[in-house]
Image 1 (spheres, one colour):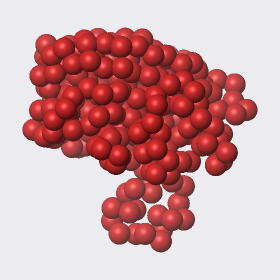
Image 2: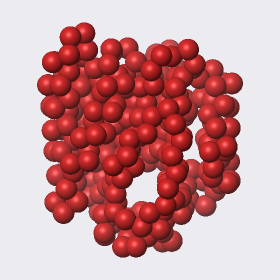
Image 3: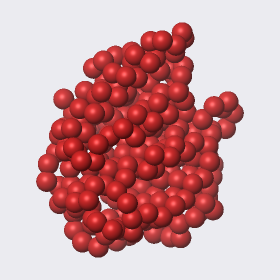
Length: 265
């Protein structure tokens, strides 16, 4: 992965009728929220997305807090286990930080991201923010939502799943519960070459557009205009939530191989 060229575009906008944007994104140390950001790089770096939990006061603080803490991660020490422990440590720090702010003790956020080192790739995930990979013209979801809906599907309770709140998350960072941080899922990749583009989204996007629509977007021109058009389509389909999209464009040329996987505890 040394010297691999990446174009990274971030689109983040506050939801209709909201006073603060609880979504945030981070690329190579820069935190983006309610704005558009684009740059090109050949360096190793971290790309992440966080969606503050709207039902808990302080979701906007939580999403930015955990992304800021990611900046301290060590690329030299990087392993799947190190990354899992590091994110667990961020959860403990968030819980302490929340405990010092009256009325925001239960602030919480999702966290999903990718880390690119000189020779490997890592994906980390907690909550229902997502990572997708584009292979040819087909989009593959690389993360599994940690939601009541997905849990019910996994145990075969299809009817119950269809009746539940699809956005109700079962795991997050913060939320006043030390056990939530242990649910982070980490995957280590020998290479991420199979994917022409990688996509990260919050539920204000992926719950309101179809996979076919996401594939059309990912196969087309990448710009602020096309990202806004996707967000507008989600709004027309009923999304009033904050909306964040990250696209990592054309990195490598060969196949993907997962070398290690550290599942949620």
